[in-house]
Length: 271
Image (cartoon, rainbow, N blue to C red):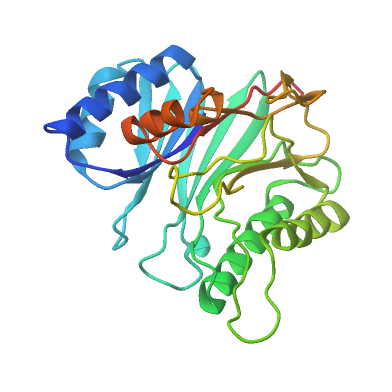
């Protein structure tokens, strides 16, 4: 379960009510592993530890104001490391959070990422560098004889480039470039989702956007979920949250109560 909970901080007043709703939602999903992005206060970390006694918790650290929190069920062998290379030399950006699970003798490295947002040239360049590093990282985890069971997931903020002068780069093109590079040279694919949009801030805001993604080694297999909105077929990543509501008013209520990001849920089959 991967979720940008948007400015997740001090748990008092209305923020405490929001924390309680988020905790209840995570418990209802009962994930073996979950990651939360934009954690901004130690109070949130302490509250989550108290509400999930059967889990081990890890959190990134540094001068950045927003951290990545990762939790894993206590009966799973796991090793956590913070990968500073994904800051791309910029102190205030988030590092990558790498959680390596060992299950039945197989290792499953999962990299959780929250990449640079905005569509200006500098932000676009930083995001492209981070995404390229995440793709290339698969080579460091595997060997010539055995490819890694590698998955990276998170808020990749793929919103394209607004150059202000000549030719923009749409978000779809940014993703196509990453997809082609990942599959052609590193045997990684972007996993399909049950609905393309994962971010929206309600009526009057920007258009619904496709910001949250998961990439995985081509040989890995996943449980499939029915696509939403009447689309035929199934996909391995289920987008859940405001996207499941039937009216704009209900969507806006969910966004106000939880986050402008829906969350990603997936289940990995054994290799």
